[in-house]
Length: 94
Image (spheres, one colour):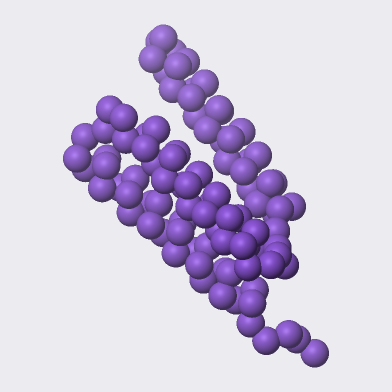
């Protein structure tokens, strides 16, 4: 195992830990809590800002191909939030 394999293994382990933490937080935090109009807009705006901010960090030294992939990923995340928000505001069960 050379030095590059060790570095790649550490990066993968860090990525795996980050995904596990985000998944755990995603299960615990409400996607769209029952807020009034203005706080709900601020909450949704924070989600959009965080998604675009992370995308900007990733795009700092990216190639055009990587840029397209990151922007598509960000669009999918925002679309998923919109869909889940719509489902959450649907008819009450019962």
